[in-house]
Length: 302
Ligand code: GDP
Ligand code: ZN
Image (cartoon, rainbow, N blue to C red; front, side, top):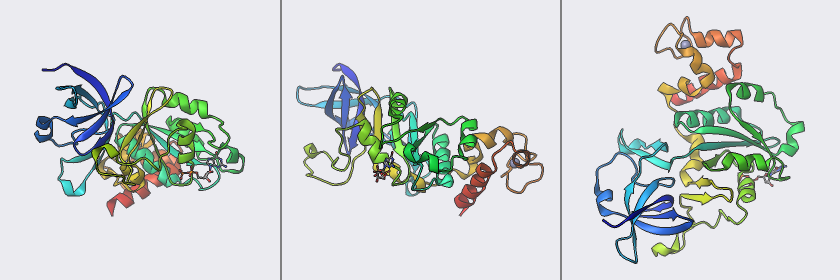
């Protein structure tokens, strides 16, 4: 067999991938045998490490997708119980972005993003943009999140303050921004990747399909080693279904008490001898976080 080299998938469209190998991006097709093999997960997505061979001088072929360290995936209701839709392989961190000023911080949405990150075993980092508006904003929510151990970066895409800390956080990792519109994600991305015009990124022309305005899942290489992942699916993260049976595990501050509840299947909403409810009464669990849990549970139950 021809010699293979390892690369990182930075773009993926039907049957073809763009692979970063030693600083060059090469287009490769998936080996037929890989495509036809039965599987319960997406064959190859951005963030995958792959082995590429060059059977002839003109073409590159992905011969193997290496095992994933982690995957950021969504279960597709119509695709059967064991079929998942992987958005990003090997994602290291989710940059959960909000801001001071407007739009006002929506704590429920913050908790929703944190739950999804926990459920997917991806490190969340809370990014608070618009540091220039901090003085006139409510910051009382912060203590609860700091004591859980969530990293919080306060910065400003407008003034540039705190951008070095963000650069350090991104170094050597695959990260993705999530957050509501208006918080400054585009402004932050253009600070980190000045050359990138996110709005013109299109399905690559070299597949002969012409120009499209739809954005294709891509990993963008950062100047300081590391990648930003952008996929259309991740922008709808705020509306993803939550894992109802595992919801308490996705609240680390509640999860430490759940083993002490009298009932193993305790929902921590109405049961007697519930250690979580006791901890809320004792002030050991932040009441707002507990309210989030109850609300998100109700929502997931609908
Ligand atoms: P996105 O919808 O999350 O991508 O947010 P945008 O990057 O489009 O920014 C939304 C608005 O916030 C724009 O009017 C930006 O100029 C503004 N903005 C971005 N960063 C800052 C900042 O650090 N301070 C202030 N005051 N405004 C900012
Ligand atoms: Zn309980």
